[in-house]
Image (tube, rainbow, N blue to C red):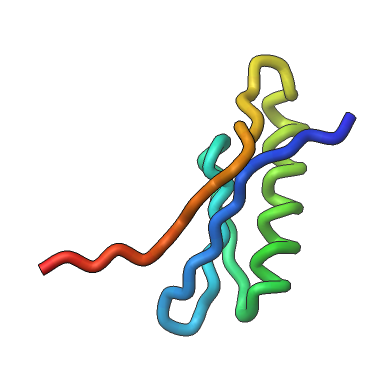
Length: 70
């Protein structure tokens, strides 16, 4: 069964850091594609280890924007 989660990727110095919001799983890569692939693998391993029962899924629309404050 396919499940949907929310992933956020940020650039931190030389690495792209990918974070699965619902599960708290984090991975990284040298580029966005590598970070995505590594996160997918990390989430799959997480699900294999902990199962899929009672896990939250993405609730739909996600809005992320840079916020700057003084």
